[in-house]
Image (cartoon, rainbow, N blue to C red; front, top):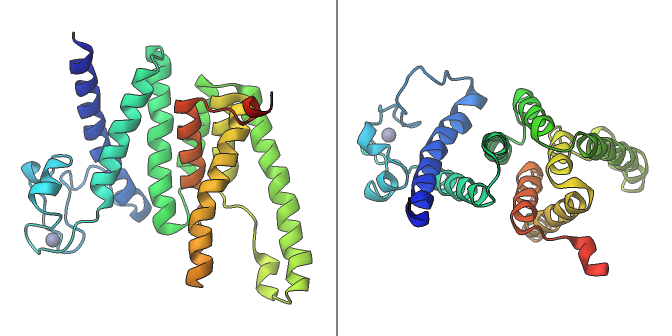
Length: 255
Ligand SMILES: [Zn+2]
């Protein structure tokens, strides 16, 4: 088969998987069954969406981003998740992993997409998704590096939480800080995924890239004077993806 045809098929398959990830993103946090109702429904008017209104990207464009029943806006995250999933699927495929690796890598990156979008919306994620993504990583990645990165993040969390709860809380005289933790619940397992897939040098690079990317909304919040907690899982996942694809190595710059 022509390479271009193959890539097109992989991309379209990715779009369809993306459509399924949308279902997970919108149903898992609300504990709605994945199979009942089978067809998707409008979250505003509960209109049951017809199959031809549910074609990835195409339907969103044809419907001009509106529900055909109540005309309420359809969230732009739907086509974004579909395109992102398709792009990720194609990028992993182009790295020519073995079949075994390919499906586990898809499992990992798909779970990270679901976790990222749930984290964006709720600032909290289901723990079973974190367990699943770590298990996939142990099956395909470097176990030692997975454990090291998780251990490293536990230490980081202990030290920075101690700093925030005792020192910073006293200096700023803000009792609210006494119960604040430095990292979210999901950051430690995701760090393990990064270490397991990338190894130590690329893994540290990915976390560095994630921290730089996370500064953008943090600075935006600062100037907007809004107290929004920046969810870190999307940025860790993006850092992982960028370094996994580009193999950019921070340490390579100094040698
Ligand atoms: Zn509707």
